[in-house]
Image (tube, rainbow, N blue to C red; front, top):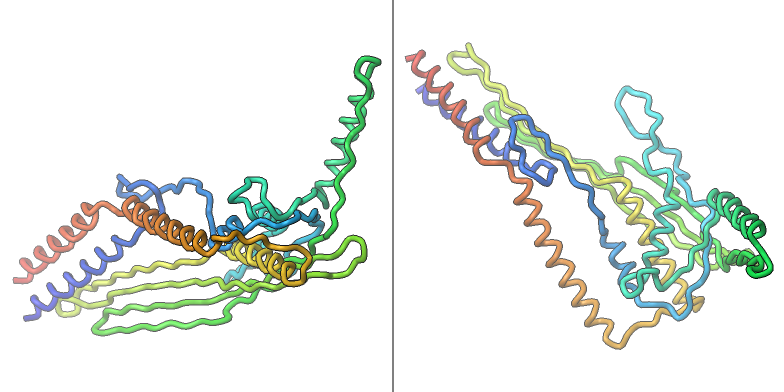
Length: 337
């Protein structure tokens, strides 16, 4: 009876390991060696907020906007237990993400975008002025009577200046978990929820008045699961100990990007409500949105199926592990008898 009980424990442990081995590991190709070396290919991530920006209806006019400062104002550092970390918790260049979101608004029908004309400002303005001086001096040097000097076009001035930044990053907003253990076999699940807040405002260049102001909030979810087996076998002379776990953390950069894109969407809607510009909705706008949503989710589901097939670990690895444990257990049982 004792031998049968030990054999059952070994089978449970093997099944547990087999289940852990079937967890999908990031990678685009199956791993052909015992040492898993899966490398992900670079890809262009299209978040739901980015997609909403791209499919926005066009505007009657395209306002010229400039972005001088849009920075991380949280001062948060990455949390590491017992280690002083100088790495920041969020990206230090949210300005680039904001400019990309402004140019992506309404870019489905027009690759250049149909909402904002963004002019270069900030640090890049110095490089732009230097390059224009080089162009001007080159044209003056090679000017002649037949080819007179052509003046450099003046820079485009902005009617609005967009200001703001990442104003909040809160950790452990919500934490929790659960677990269970029976006869030395246990499992636990944990989760943690953080949040990031983005503020965006539009300032009139002529009057200096803040005409639009929005704030957006995005959660960052982290989950973890683990299991273990801790059992003595053969009259408490042998110890079976198995451990496995996995954590999944939502990308902070993706969360900041999504919050910034949501802020641009909210700014456009607020400007339409306050009549600073007008969103031109097509006559069949609702049916077009429904078709786009259906096509998007069908594409997303098919991509998830393909990724699952690519990331599937060959069944031979699980079977080999199971056979090794069974052979080991049968040898121990034979010696015991």
